[in-house]
Length: 260
Image 1 (tube, helix red, strand yellow):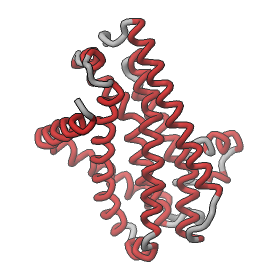
Image 2 (tube, rainbow, N blue to C red):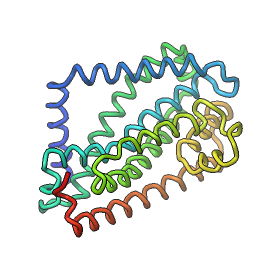
Image 3 (spheres, one colour):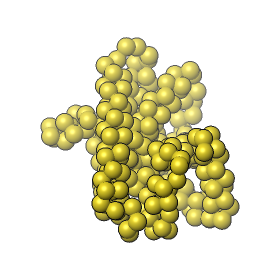
Image 4 (tube, rainbow, N blue to C red):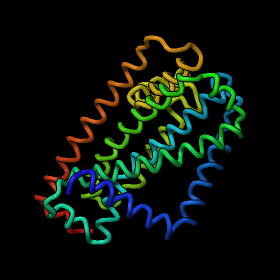
């Protein structure tokens, strides 16, 4: 099957899930909205963080948190249903199969994030600020997409680990909290201990938040922050792909694909 056909099939399957489990999806997204509002009222008094930057940061965090755990969830579900080994036995490229799942999931998550973003912009009363940015919003979106791509590829690492350990969701949850509290979304990175700062600067969201600040407060101009963001994205993408392909080879060799 071509990638186009794989993506089409995944959309059909997603639509079926939405119709059957719509109540679950509604309340899941409602919980995300409540979390955003709660975080906003908890951290809006932070003098170093404007409401608009906080909103951009929270949306990016939500997308990246979903991305980093996605492949682990997919492989765990396929293993539980006993279909994981069949995926690796088809003539279709395994990378192509998982790539199609990522494309569809990413599209769906972006659509959900847009709805939550619109609602939160009204609640946070920053809609006028967003309109004032004008075409600069396109650069904000581009930065978010770059971050999301890097975390989907990093999620390949956890997908590979799932082949061995079967359940690694708690590990992904640890990264979710790190992304929220140590990347400049809720607290300034400069106020963190030096060792945590060093870790923070190895995370794309940190540089994305710095880029958001640059665009919102200083306008578009050359910035080293964007260079470091692109460098982080490239490293995450490379390491994620290499780690995943290595884990697949090892799992096949050890006969892990058919175990759960």
